[in-house]
Structure formats: structure tokens, C-alpha cells
Image (cartoon, rainbow over all chains, first blue to last red; front, side):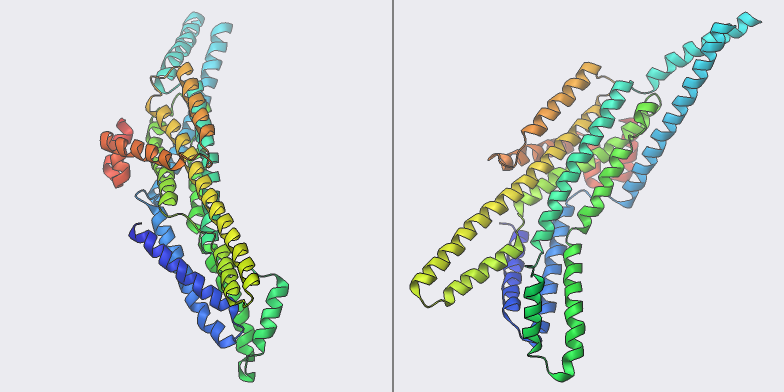
Length: 98
Length: 303
């Protein structure tokens, strides 16, 4: 078990314990005391999970811009190809008629 | 004069027909890349949805019915002093909002990621109509195919190394064991403990299945990504028959990958090793991993 797994287990156990306590109490003051602690643990788990999911490869804003640029180039290639095919068809038509 | 015009027109047609196929790829290959990208989008989005569900469930608190909530509020109100009634009302409304907000943030990175896979597939939307001139753009797109494929392999490994919990079910189960411990009648206590233990076994199997299904889906997506990379890599040398073989083989592999396969975790190693081998032998993969932008743009153009 690596350190991140240990941390996730620790956070998960603490969160479960706090939630069990929270659900068991009908005391307003205790609920108010436990809520920020629970929220803090959920936030910690979420942050750690996101970090672990990120991994070695991150899609940056530059990557998104790069993909949009490629999309634009391929769209432009399609326009160019349509235009040239139209010219070729017209030329062939003239060639056949003249 | 007429003959010269006619000759010019014929010459133009000949030049165009000679130039176009050498500038890019055939329509069949372009269609293959476009379809492979669409397949990659579908498999990846399914993987991201499964991963999103796991992420949300890992940070989820047990829900309450309206009736349970009303009973709890009424009982809690019994402990509220008169000067704290306003605070009670406002804080009970706010607390629910805060919890909902937290729960929604658990998978926001994955929801955003779905748009990236959409954008990737959309890059090729006009490829069938522009295949003569899109060769260079298609080559450059390989960087993103590599990145997103590596990401799917990483997700699969990440689920294996840090499996997700169905957290609210854990809370309810702990409550059941604690309630069983409080029982004084030995027979009742034994029955309650057995019931809770049955649920524990069910929960363990359910969690294993949910995690393995998500791993399998990430690997299906990774396999679809590999096909695009292969098609881009070899698209100047592949015949139409090769393209058909490649896509048919990949579809067979994708349909064979299943969360119920006991070897599913070992399969991750196969994809992991594929990525590691590529990083070790292909400078473009190495540059993608290192996010080496200068090398990437040079290699993508010349690859």
C-alpha cells in the first residue's frame, strides 16, 4: 500500500466515524461542530483524488488551443479540396465541350 | 485557340488528379481515422462517466428521505435555545447547500475532461472531405491521441492502485454494526451481526465489480486510442485492407475486455508496459510525457 492509499484510508475512516456521529446526534450544537470537520475531510479526499487522477499527462489550455487549430486546418483543407474539385470538374466540362 | 483551351483544361485536370493523392491520404483511410476517433470518443466518455460515478460515490454522504429529514430537524429543534432559532433555520438550509456543492465538485475535473474527448473527435469531422490536404494536420494530431490514450491507461492504473469506495454504504454498514453491538439480547445481537456481515460481503463484491468495470472501460478506451495512433503512424504505408484488418482486430480486443475478467488487473500492466516501451523508444511519446513543447511541435511536424 503506497502513502496515498494509506492517506485515503485514513481520511476515509475519519470521515466515516464523523458521519456516523453526525447522523446519531440530534443536538444542534454538536451538528454545527461536526459539519465543518466533515466538509473539510470530504474536500481533502476530493483534492487528493483529483491529484491522483491527474497523473503524468495533463491536458493544458495550450493543448486545447492546439486541437482547435488542427480542427481549423482540417476544415480549411476540406474547403480547399471542395473548391479544387469544383475547378477540376469545371475544367473537365470545358475540356469535353470545347 | 479552342484546342489550346481544351488542352489547358485537360492538363489542369491531370495535374490536379496527380497532385491530390500525394498530398494526403485516401478517403478510406481518412474515414478510418474519423471513425476510430469517434469510437475513442464513445469509449472514453463511457469510461469518464463510470469514473465520475465512482468519484461522486466516494465523497457521498448517506441520503435521507424527506420524512427522515423532517423528523431529524424536529428533534434537533428541541435542543435549540430561543436566541439561536434564526441561526438554526439559516444554518440548516446552508449546510445542505454546502454538502451538495462539495459532492458536485468531486468529479468536476472528469466532467471537463469529457469536453476534451469531444474536441479530439471533432478535430477530424471534415477529414473525409479534406483528406487530400490534411496530411500535416493529421500528423500533428498524433500528440493529442498519445496524450489522451496515456491518460486512459493512467486512469485504469489509478483505479487499481486506489480503488474507490461506495462511501455512504460504508457509513450505513458501520451504523448497523454499532447498533448490533448495543443489543443486549444475545440471539438478536447474533442475528443483527450476521445481517450486517452479509451486507459487508455484498458491499465488498459490489465495490470490486464497480472498480473493475471502470478499469475495463478505461482499457477499452485506451485500445481505441492505440488504433488512431497506429492509423496516423502508418497511414502513408497502409493499404485499405490493412486499415480494415487493424480496425477489425481492435474492435475484437475492445469487445473482449471485460470487468468480470479475473485477469483485468494484469491487463493494465500490458497497457502500462506498452506506454513505457513507447516512451523509451519513441521521442514523441517521451516529449508528450515530459510536456516538452518545443520538441513536440518539431517532432509532430516531421513525424
